[in-house]
Figure 1 (spheres, rainbow, N blue to C red):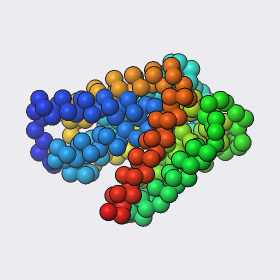
Figure 2 (figure 1 turned 180 degrees about the vertical axis):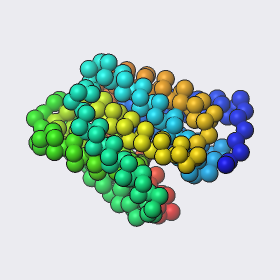
Figure 3 (figure 1 turned 135 degrees about the vertical axis):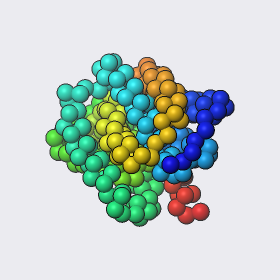
Figure 4 (figure 1 turned 60 degrees about the vertical axis):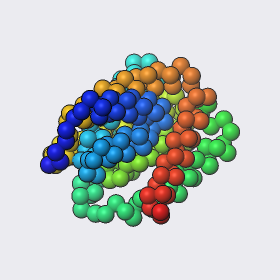
Length: 255
């Protein structure tokens, strides 16, 4: 097991990075773009950094989910089928990553996110207002839950962006409601991955909980601002996160 020594400076760094990650993640996803590099920068091996990140991100996704539900932007009664299929997909994905190399999928994801980016960019008012769903909810939750739950358990980057885009495009949600339901689905797959890392003893609890305190506060602040400002605020943040995720994955894979 990695020998981790917590200092005051590291504690402050973890709390503040968790705060920033939780804020961004609760609005548009992509908080891992902040938290994982920070955990790696203090010397954690990749698997332990990923496990510790799942611990802290679970607190943020729970905090954001709770706030969105409280404000009526997400509904557990409506989302339970999505939660169920996301859980199944995440279990399969988390198991599969232990058997297979995730490298092949990491080359595909930047191009899929690029499609989401340009589709959103050229779709005018997409996400500003609710629209009629273009597929039945049961089919959507089964397909998206299994696919995106699997993806989050197997690889992860961009999951929140894919969920938000899927809710907006296929169910006609506005950006605020899509962000709320996305946090619920993210929390589901986060918990599955967290249990897997706990079983594998790949978590530094002192670091994860320190970062989780900032993550929960940041998620509360971000979800509050997202609900208050609506799609006009969420959309540019959403597109910025997608673009940064694309650039990061391209850099990792090809440079």
